[in-house]
Length: 344
Image 1 (cartoon, rainbow, N blue to C red):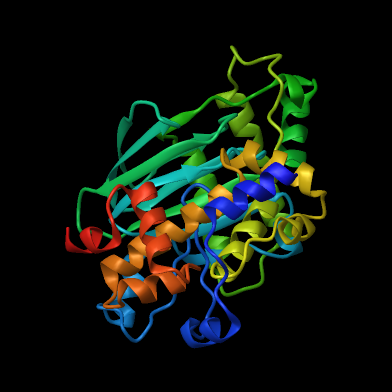
Image 2: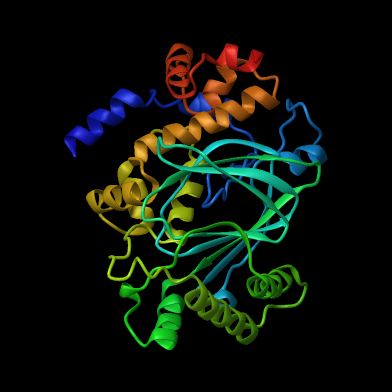
């Protein structure tokens, strides 16, 4: 623990004082870095170069709709509007199988293991990704047309997955794992996902019976169609469930310019600091302090690209009261100093 605290003190800037926070903070907290590009970015501010309407159309990961409440038991469904060109992002290895379904637009989506070789996939509306990776990986994309690039995420709860495995194979779900799918089309899956999308955006109250019926059908279809025959007997990954990782990333973004506190993060998900560090690194590939730095740099890059704020103001917005320390961290993480990044 002492070593962890020492590492934090070396890598993180001194906390911004209360007065500076009050002067630099705006009206709304921001949310970034969600699962499988579940990334929310800040609300429009007065100094930004685009209008509020235009900004909402192109910011990375604008959340269009999301499931919540008892109606969506064992399912997490979210619709995002993506920016057309996205830098590298880390996709955490969450416990639940994840489907990403392209709703509109087309793009070249590239994936790789951390530090590995990029693998490109050309995708269009109707294509999907199935992620069951036992380790985090990197992702980036570039749209190939002017149409909005919208995707739907579906996290399949482990209880539902286990029931589907029991129904199909009459065995323990720990002996079954789904294979990875990148940019393929599945007509049956598309029909089921469309039913959930319609239920999500409908004005009427969701029907638990309908949602659970579609969810069960979808789980059985995945197990029947995408079970990896070469993965049997492999231990399923552990880590933070999707809802807990989402809670942590939202908390970090809402307190992005605060002093890093490992104990506060651990208390958010109800585990010890040691257990939290282990689960978080297994899920994201990074220690919590390093993950925070990546979040800060992601926001700093966006502010430098899309606002007229000075470098000092950008540094304050992402938690660095020392301009020189902000420039040092930015250069280490991005490869150039903030002023050069803005001028590119």
